[in-house]
Image (cartoon, rainbow, N blue to C red):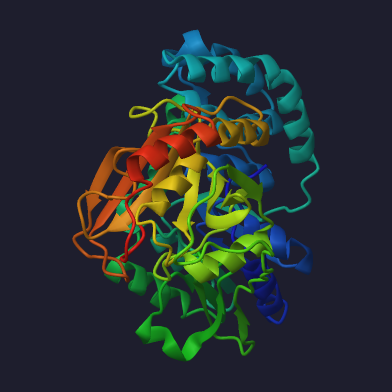
Length: 458
């Protein structure tokens, strides 16, 4: 129901720390979706919350028994005027804002067929989903003593010295992505936002200094802070690809949460260095443990691993020649101007190492773009899927592996190369379903099947 969340392990650490505090009230800065408040709400403290977005302010004021004023923007009356019927009583308004975080994906794109259908579907289903969401809102147990829509940097000055403070600030810094995320929602609904400045750099350090002046305090960051090193009491990183959260507090409890990866070997043989390819290309679904195992064997160790929605082995006559993994697309908004959407995301793709075929990696891509995989993705998403997107990090302005099969959609040159040293971030896309698995194999054999010899597989 709520947008985003701090990890469950972080919630447990916070609750354990706070349960030992000797104070009456706790002040939570940059509350976001109120995950912290919901985590510690049964400990008996008076809770005071703060944030600056319409989304958080509508929820927060409701939980505090108040109501932040906002109104529907009449400029959107033609497409979304029906929403005015769902902003009457306080619970109505909260439910509409919560659901609005989904609807906002269509704002400004009504001229595109897919988004027009999506907007109409929301309108048709709104009475039912709004009623269900409103019912959940009315059953919320957590309550606040106060909510303040204000700049957290100055808000913290008014917190009594003998009370507790928790803050887990947004990690977007000066890029303002946190603000951009809710931009369309705040176009649909007008309100008077508070004045505030983004907290990053020296201002963030000064903010944390203010927090540490209170009797009880804890804050989380994505980076280690040398100045507060004596107070570093915990760290959570729930997935290999996840952002670490460093926990600073004046409490004594120490906790460390790290990802644990379970692996399971695949019993099929892998292609050998001098082995010829057979005749029939197939794919086989892999469990997460099986994919983690083959990924650990062959994928570039500099690539941060992620958790796939689907994973497959690519086989020729039952011999494994590679693997790929897919993930549900997180958003459609970034690439719909470049390629037909909806899409899925190609999270990983790699060949078995040391075969004699130099372009074996391209055969894995032919399999990933096949009609069979497209159909599987449509079953997973329960809607039409048109394209496959992926990202490559490289020191070259193009990726030879994807060139020819995928179109380069965007290229970002990093002024500060990442930890692995790659200079470019390349986003690629390709339409799916132009060939079957076997047809793709025949195309690959004609183009690349004779490209053999020693050297790196591409």
